[in-house]
Amino acid sequence: MTSAFEPPYIPALPTDAVALFDLDHTLLEGDCGQLWVEYLADRGLVGAGTLRAQLHDYYRDYRAGCFDILAYTRFQLGILEQLGADQAVRIRELWWHESLAPRLRPAACRVLEAHRARGHRVVLATATHRFLVEPVAAALAVDDLIATETWPDTGTGTGTGTGTGTGEHNFLGQAAFAHGKLERARVLCASAGLRLEASAFYSDSHNDLPLLAAVGHAFAVNPDERLAEQARAADWHILDWRMESVAQMP
Image 1 (cartoon, rainbow, N blue to C red):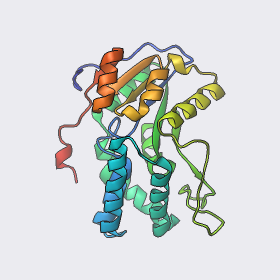
Image 2: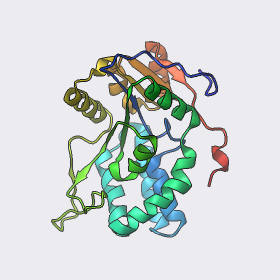
Image 3: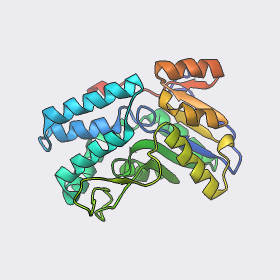
Image 4: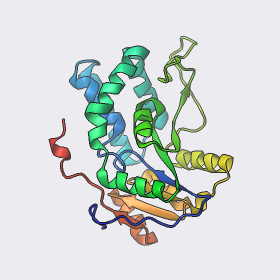
């Protein structure tokens, strides 16, 4: 494994390629959706016991390879509806500064900035709902954001206003998970005249194997067991971006 403290290797990309970065456990030390629920529960803003139990079930399914991204997104949107749009936006700002920003991995940020310095187009590609990841995208000043999106919207960006009273949400395009993330990346590249096959992608998860296999430069970042096995077989780069101080974080 490459040490997080060594000068990063940055692939030479052509001008019509992009550098794509996963968020959870790649750029971020932790999982964005989980950190959001824990932040709300710790402050008594939502029903802690029920939500933590539901969250546990979703991540059990994720590890088992039977994760339902649509159900999980609706679970997260239900939390936003409980909070209300205005309160959700206010809390998100506090959550970003107190919980997310300290967990951005320095090694990851160095690589992202190195790509930017070389003139590469930088893309954040995550399965998490857009509302939760917009602060990260803004802070990192990425050129494009691929995230799971829903409509109608309340006008605040939460994606929770159904307009029908049914409690149902419509998804804009495919949810950006597994093959859906690959398809969203293909759409982005096609619309901008870019070549996905010449691009780079950094991820920790086997769920991103479809997109990793589609790019010219695949990087496994602190990979899970299945991704590590595939990375070794395919001779992909394996990187260590972990933060040693995360245990002391609030």
